[in-house]
Amino acid sequence: MDSHEGNPAGGVIGIDPTITPTVWKLDAKPEMPPVGQMAKNAAGAFARNLASVMEGNSVNADPDVIKDRQAICGECEHMTNNRCAKCGCWLQYKTILRAEKCPVGKWE
Image (cartoon, rainbow, N blue to C red; front, side):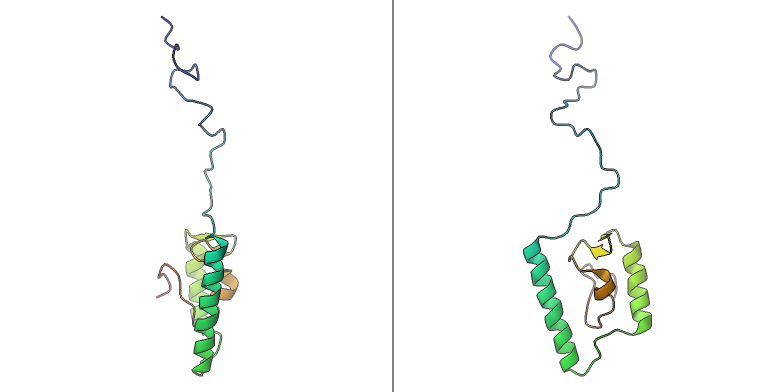
């Protein structure tokens, strides 16, 4: 009896090419949240920042805070193409707004 008999791939280790990817994504980036969730996140950001301005705060965070936030985001596993994969925000904008928060709590 042939040792490859009954093996759909005909190989020794039994890889089935119909369900095994031919290219492995070794540098796969996280996917963005669904569009509806990103819209909800943007609306929340707008409301938070509007409330902060109405309280008399400036729109922008302090320059040192912005620099710290950008450094944290630059090293974050959730950053992809200058966007946060947890909330979908563009980080060049999110990091400068005083009332914004990191969705996974890394800024505080």
